[in-house]
Image (cartoon, rainbow, N blue to C red; front, top):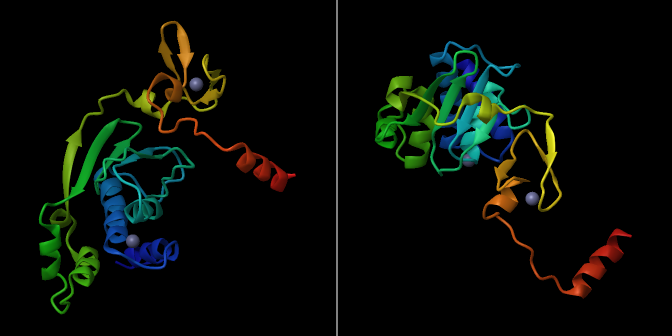
Length: 206
Ligand SMILES: [Zn+2]
Ligand SMILES: [Zn+2]
């Protein structure tokens, strides 16, 4: 448990609080790696984690495992779910962990003196046996792992916008190399900006 306490201290120092989601993240990080037989924290690229949400939960996982966006060992597929798939890169074994359906109710049993929901979860999640806390499911990735990992350092140019695309994230369409923004509906579009707003911005920069 002392290991968990240390992790929670680091995780909560990134916030102004410790919350049940950080606890779930830290415990899921420890549990996922343990189930794959991988030692923590990782300093290599032997473990890839695909998270299904961002936020406090992500910080708990990151602190517990050493996997991070910066090292390309942590990815987010934002499904808005407290869940994650742990992939042993060497063997390609993949395990998806998620909280059990009634985990909030179960937490009460492990925090008998606590009468407030939030604090019962905060305490209970730290104490519950891991198999009461999470489901473990062997999964197969729908994309080849090497495609998900991709090769860093490769660069091509988008035929439409001219911007550089790294890490093999280009799309080949109608004999063109396209970035995702050009090939699909991008998350942004050019906005009309009043000329005076722009010129005052440039004046500040100068
Ligand atoms: Zn939080
Ligand atoms: Zn483009």
